[in-house]
Amino acid sequence: SFKPLVFSGVQPTGNLHLGNYLGAIRKFVALQESHDCIYCVVDLHSITAQLVHDDLPAQTRSITAAFLAAGIDPKKHIVFNQSRVMQHAELAWVFNCVARIGWMNRMTQFKDKAGKDRENASLGLLAYPSLMAADILVYRATHVPVGDDQKQHLELTRDIAAKFNNDFSRKIASLGVGVEMQMGEENVSGFFPLTEPLIEGPATRVMSLRDGSKKMSKSDPSDLSRINLTDDADTISKKIKKAKTDPEPLPSELDGLKERPEADNLVGIYAALAERSRQDVIAEFGGQQFSVFKPALADLAVDRLAPIAAEMRRIYADTAYVDSVLRDGGERAGTIAEGTMKTVREIIGL
Ligand code: ADP
Ligand code: NA
Image (tube, rainbow, N blue to C red; front, top):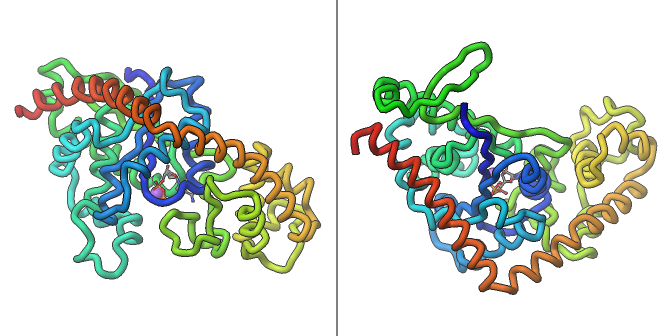
């Protein structure tokens, strides 16, 4: 069977926010104990929605600094930026030929990001999930920690792996490069694993502070909608104070949050930051007004985020160190990726 291996990536665009931290980076840190991990700053993805960026190298270093500040160990695991390892793009091309246009057209993130003028979106934006599948499968990663928003892309990654395994099944068998894997009751064999998402915990989808129906996102034009990892204490307090809520106090039962997305989101954020259950948070704050709960949430957020922000600034200032981490990580990642691509070229006949 496949060796357990974790891969995940974050784009170097805009400020990292609380959603990125709780939905992704904090999980990256936790998984280091139990898995071999590869964490990537996906710069090739960042040019799909917007081609020209002011200072992409600085953005890449900033995300890298966030990884390291949050506690990822670049000696035990691999931290690098995607464009250093060209095998990502090479495998993505292969996957562009494996995947069907219809699969890409169905992706909700493409529909959201392309907006109304779909004909005018970049071809790269449409093919984004194909590159994401390549990022994961070029390491034959078995697990991907991501926010709930990436679930559909992970399903597509499995579809691509399954189609490749199936289309080339005879060649994979004759070269003897198939690996056994357990799929429910069935035992199947293939070159690529059917990668599982790791989506769990109380804040897998952090919503906007201004609109409980939208996820917190870097691309939201309103800075009040998100808490950035680098926001200072006053800014965090102000944003939480201004967060949209309803006039009712917090319910005394978890069920009472059902029709109240904004309240539910704040309780979920509190639970995630405190590493307690929602139930527990409601047991403590049920019946209280937001005028009590919001300051408690602000204090907790500042307490958890301020040390990371300070460490991030310290690491970011050491450009030579950050670059050396990326260079070393890129070399180690490149060795694994080239191993996979050698076999892929052989399977296809390239
Ligand atoms: P964004 O969606 O803000 O552009 P990315 O696409 O770079 O951020 O996502 C980086 C990681 O953060 C992904 O694993 C994604 O699932 C996670 N993530 C992004 N937004 C949220 C959110 N609002 N809640 C939970 N996880 C999120
Ligand atoms: Na995203």
